Image (cartoon, rainbow, N blue to C red):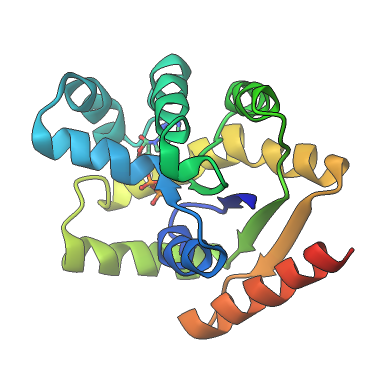
Length: 191
Ligand code: ADP
């Protein structure tokens, strides 16, 4: 199973990614988590990524693409993977297509979580208090949302045209959203 989980910042991708990946027995690969791990370990990649992340900007495609390529080359990702937070730009879509077709496989589905924008700001501000993420301040949240609309939202149409987009209502209880994702992916598996 090769899946992408998409949605605006705060849509609950990270939370759902862990459940869905476990359900399908594939690793959840979160670019945000990998960047944050590198930042906290003070690696060269982390130092470079941090200045973009703190401003709510995307890390440059070359850096992100290289990182994802290395990660999906690892043994545990051979049977499949769930990507959380990648691709986020059209250039990343192309790069990912190349990585997957090189292995003779294809993407099974792109799950897009839809949420109410007002709800999102509340969730992110609450997460700021709980997790203390450096990019969860109100200004940076707003910037991340703008960038999402400019650079990532267009990807939804790309995947819709390919016929692999699955839109799932991301509002409500975590368990309910997870159940909706499974139901939507069962439909895909049967079609
Ligand atoms: P969010 O909560 O906004 O979904 P993530 O945890 O996925 O955030 O990512 C945090 C930050 O890491 C992003 O704002 C961005 O700076 C960087 N990042 C993550 N994935 C990518 C990507 N695919 N391309 C560029 N930058 C990325």
